[in-house]
Image 1 (cartoon, rainbow, N blue to C red):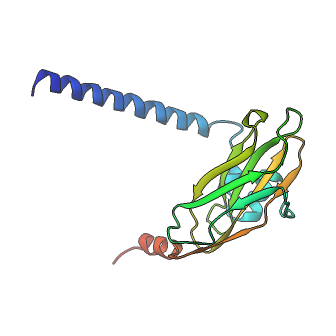
Image 2 (spheres, one colour):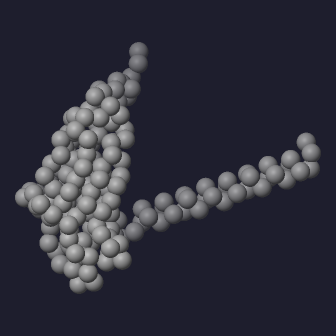
Image 3 (cartoon, rainbow, N blue to C red):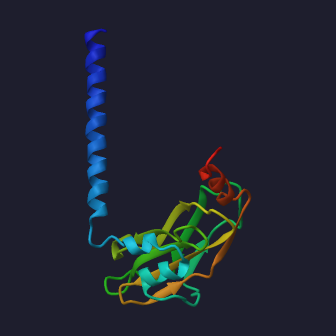
Length: 173
């Protein structure tokens, strides 16, 4: 092995080790935060997830939320979701958080986005997993405690994941 090749490989290995250590440390720190909504992400039903995040089981739909989701998807591992809220983003009145739910997933809470007036507008784009035919919904919470919910947007899965996951976890003889 040439000296230059050895030095190049050593530098790559050490940078990978340092990077893995930093990422692992950040994940461990995030798991220990007092503000991490562990109960909300661990909830196994939509009602429990709503109760853990916004302390309500049901919310009426609001025209302020715009939710765009395809009605039929072929790839349930990557379903695009676009959310926008028609609400002012002033220092005294703004959308503080967006909660994205997938009704029939094993853990319905898919994501939480935190906003501030510096965002200029409360909006987000993400991709979620949808394990079976389900509905996607969003709840927005303002800094004043107001809650706005979207109407459930149904998503039909071309090839459901639930039966495939069940078969892959079954013991083989």
